[in-house]
Amino acid sequence: MNDDLALLRRTAAECLCWPDPETCAALPHLHEALVPVRHPAGRPLRAFLGWAGARTAAELSAHYTGTFDFTRRHSLHLTWWTDGDTRRRGEALVRFKAAYRAGGLEFDGEELPDFLPAVLEFAAATGSDALLREHRPALELLRLALTEHGTPYARVLAAVCATLPGPSPKDRAAALALARSGPPQERVGLDGQPPYGHLGLLPVLTGGRR
Image (cartoon, rainbow, N blue to C red; front, side):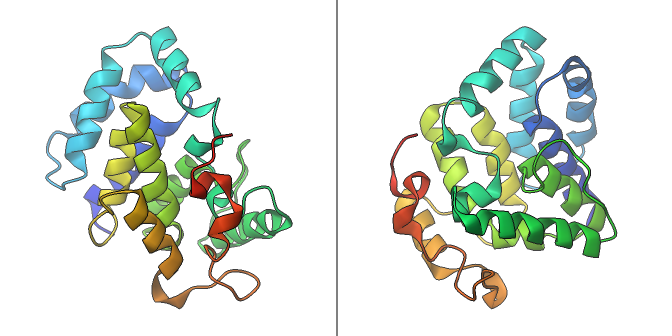
């Protein structure tokens, strides 16, 4: 895989993790590493790193909490967007672990295996963006939700989406249309149905706030 894509995805993973002191100390180095990158995803990531680097660890932690901890509409767990709190979700999480194992890696993190930073690290390490492409609608809906929220974290999602083929949907309706069309390469869910075939059942995807 292109070295720039690996760097961009690894950097995005760092940006989306809890901003502990170690992560905050690494921000200037991440920004410096991206300076020579000419991929379009570099611009929003550099903008986010510039913003984050100007905040204290306490300020950044408070913003992270306010952005991700109080609404599921900002969930960084990809199976929430496809399966909500249904029994399907457990099976989907098993698929993530199987994908990591097939890529030669064993998932041993404290988070669930569908946690976006973990998926980005996997893509960076293996060169496979299959999980990201399969969950592209979730990524786009999260990007739009964060944009509506007015948080700079939307720039990180914009960068993640920019590492994938094709343009991003312009609005929520277009993102939902993308979800209804199913993932690329005719991939299907565990029960043989498209992963986004139950859009009407999920408040996250249909506009409800929880």
